[in-house]
Image 1 (cartoon, rainbow, N blue to C red):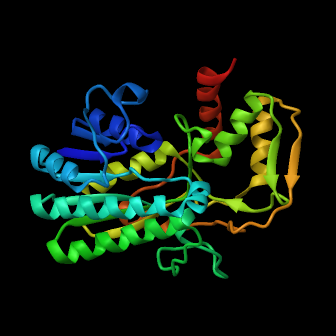
Image 2: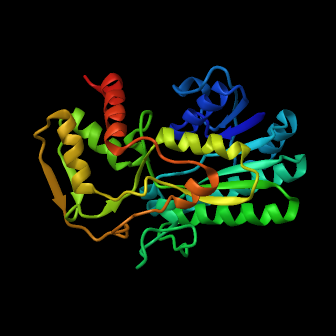
Length: 307
């Protein structure tokens, strides 16, 4: 199978590319960054430096390469940047439309779309969040991801392209860094660099953390899944930020202090995301516990960043 992976040199995308190539698929990577600046570019994949907001570039790539499947992971992903520069998140929507237009024109069979359960669900009295929970994104980033889902569903009706939408909870693991403002990567890097940890308010807010290899497994299963569908990909486990900081400090035997910072925030108080539909219909299940995943992530950081 020939697969185009957008963002295939990023944190999540590079792991997916590695898995697809290991399974014997032909992989094309589309990324806007220069190849020599991409430490996780798989040498067995074809690489194209293109801007997904430029329709001519995408059309030429799809016309020339004729992929069977598009796996779309490229996006502006920082929620913080989304709040500061919301117009940048319009690029997420433009990229989806450009890909779908090219897919329609050159008859691509399927798109796998990386959406965000952590961003499109908001507060709800009924937990855990399921795929039937009414989406209510509270950041421009979440709005852009939900819009991408709706465009994909519309184009499926228009031109018959198949789709699988994967709504990720909070992803972590090797190759992630705190440029994306992930709390796990920030905590680990701060401890390695001897900086104290800062937690908003009392730290009782919860998140549903999922290890990157479990996401990769979902993207592998999505290749053969032949029904248009949307799945939460999560651990279905709540972990408070306060407890998370204690777990990570314990792995380093660190005595670094924690500063609790009072602030008004639009972040969710609780994030608890059901994965039952994915278990039943996609035949997927998470295999890595938070403890196991943190151990692997800390090892990677110590190999790559410790002085």
